[in-house]
Image (tube, rainbow, N blue to C red):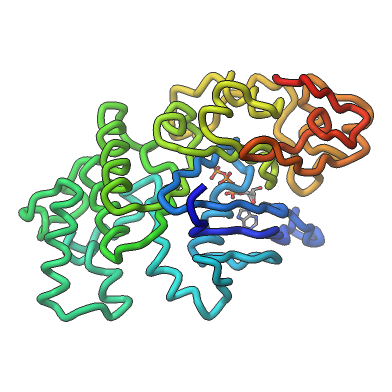
Amino acid sequence: MTAPVLELKNVTKTYHVKQGLFGKPKPLTAVNDVSLTLGRGEVLGLVGESGCGKSTLAKILLGLEMPTSGQVLVDGEEINGQDRLALARRIQPIFQDPYSSLNPRKTIADIVSLPLRVHGVGDAASRAKSVRETLDLVGLPARVLNTYPSQMSGGQRQRVAIARALIMHPEIVICDEPTSALDVSVQSQILNLLNDLRTEFGLTYLFISHDLAVVEHLATRVAVMYLGRIVEEAPVATLFEAPRHPYGRALLNSVLTPDPSLGVPDTQLGAAYPNPIAPPSGCHFHPRCPFVQDHCRAVAPRPVPIGEGHVECHLHDPDSPMYRADFTV
Ligand SMILES: Nc1ncnc2c1ncn2[C@@H]1O[C@H](COP(=O)(O)OP(=O)(O)OP(=O)(O)O)[C@@H](O)[C@H]1O
């Protein structure tokens, strides 16, 4: 891996959720002790079912949520509360639905120049020049400058969102399902654009997607998230050829729903996704795991380094009674 540009160390985010009108708030751990490292120029694909904590992780990286515990480091420097504005210059988001993430009352010129104005970068003339150059970069003509999001197609709107993200010259872009609201015919154009921009500017992406074909196409590494934890992380080829965690395999075998708005792969795992307020004992995946044994119900697995990644499963832990040296799923 190249020098790490972004590191998460034991990051946990716990919300307190009230159930019913008079219920006492109960802890819900949306992100649970996550450690991840992104090398410069890498694309880390983050996959998992709806509710597993992907967006919460993205919000923590964007400074929109503070972690309950753990550290976020950019270029080896820990980011804390006061650094959030500075962080926003280096980490920018592209969200799923460009229509709701773009202010319908603002012109494209206003939308794309907003980050420059918020951060007090340049004067009006230099900002206008940056906007024109950035729109050109994402394949939009200067004539769109004075139009509104409603006058554009979905693909054009996502290009505007990409321009807004890039105008600050960020190092890291958090792409949260950036193509799932788009027509299939437009998706590949946007993916190719993201890929070209990454190569040209040496960008690092965290790429959140439920679409494994997209992740395989774009990512260099993949992290599989389940109930707030990264249960498997590996280079993309390794994960797609031989997933080591039973959940990783289930995801790969999943039939993707034809309706992208659902954003949920059908894992065909039978048992329902667990309630994060009352997670299963031991290994959180045990109620759905085809390899479950009593040990899994009693003891939580620990992350075991394997190759250039890690996996959390007793079958891979040499210290576990379930260890099977030859196990692949
Ligand atoms: N502000 C909040 N307050 C309470 N619970 C929250 C909050 N935000 C998220 N959660 C809960 O945290 C868990 C993780 O949610 P999150 O949105 O991060 O998942 P996700 O994987 O991004 O799902 P999706 O793909 O549907 O967006 C869920 O159980 C969700 O209900």
